[in-house]
Image 1 (cartoon, rainbow, N blue to C red):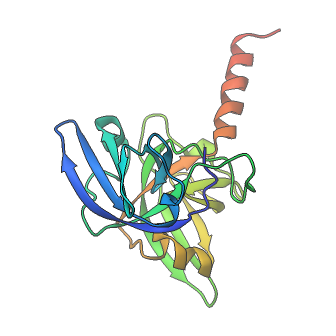
Image 2 (cartoon, rainbow, N blue to C red):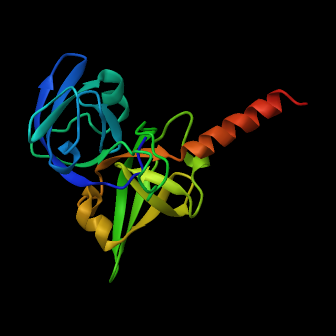
Image 3 (cartoon, helix red, strand yellow):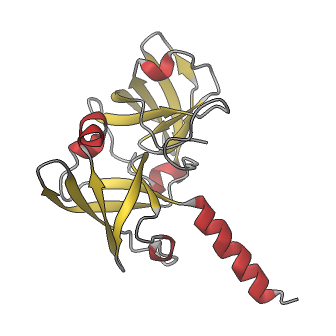
Length: 204
């Protein structure tokens, strides 16, 4: 489990094609301080498992299922990614509960800068299930592993407001219109939906 508070920006060092998977090597510093084999690290919001590590890099295997459903498909050496270690019980929950399980890939539509922040508009993926129902104004959304507050939730898109800290310390400061971003909706909303659906099908 994660909190959506990015710890550092890492850099893709190598991508090894393996047919129905890739082996991703990421150069990092902070997330490697106590990382061991089998530990979880979120890469642009995708929960990956450390398979090997050196003093300056870690390697993770990315299966076809993950490639099909996230923006990790197409990453290459030199690309910058958001990194966060799994949260521990003694840490503050600075963002919100993030699983690292991407629900869909959105697209940056527009950026509107202001004096002290920037509003970013993101289109939701066109999927049969849809994600619109999970978004509400002032609710939580994870974009490329960053915990954000929804400013305005529309039918097929939403906006977020990025403060200078987020613009500087995450990849969201450089995502241009047309670029793809990983989205994870609030898991609590999904649980509530499931419970209400069960209650409707099983009236007392």
